[in-house]
Length: 310
Image (cartoon, rainbow, N blue to C red; front, side, top):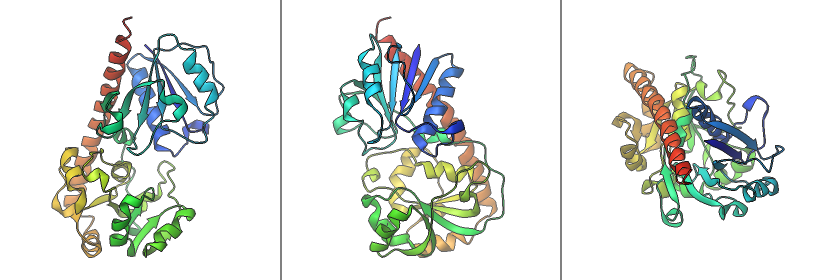
């Protein structure tokens, strides 16, 4: 089987992109190659051999800024390839120029509505981020929240983002939080350089989610796995209980909070022997999930390829 993954992000030297979907693609490619699959990886700004033939083409994520014309020509020139889309965002759609080619989807969330006509694999893409735990260092700060600004989280922003909590966000989004009355401490985007991650300076991270994902299951977010790597304990708003239950992780009630005051009181209690043991268990399960995800993707792509009757 011959697979091509088309990444909407531009290429970065030595694979240093901070975009999760680009990092996921690299992990998937390594997993497929370990299983004997030939893979080619294109970024948006790469030179493309538009005549090369593949069994599977996977389009990763979506972008308004993608140089898409050459990839449309690549897809049009395929004689037998099956084309799929891979995404970890339930509210994203593939670029319209690719949509007519797509017959299957690999996603992080439950199949619903507009995606019901596609052959579909729900798998834990976020677990692909997991790596060895970083060295433990002295923690300088208590709790941080970071993540994309989403209107569907605004009531949770207002509930928690105040006082001693530190919010990492882009400068363009700071005014959005401030307009909601958030009076926490603001810092710029986190640094993700290996073994020098900003997150490793924090004792805890706050986990909230979109209201939609309270009922539409989406695997635990990237920041859960990033926290595990960086020895940063996760605390969940109580509205995430359904997601926690479906995730298969055993999350003791200590990590589930219902107010800013409860969150800060719990954070002051870590680290302790319980949290140290729990973080080890989370890491072990995440490593297992990563390998399970790679195997499921491999088996799914083999099934798709075999449907061609070759």
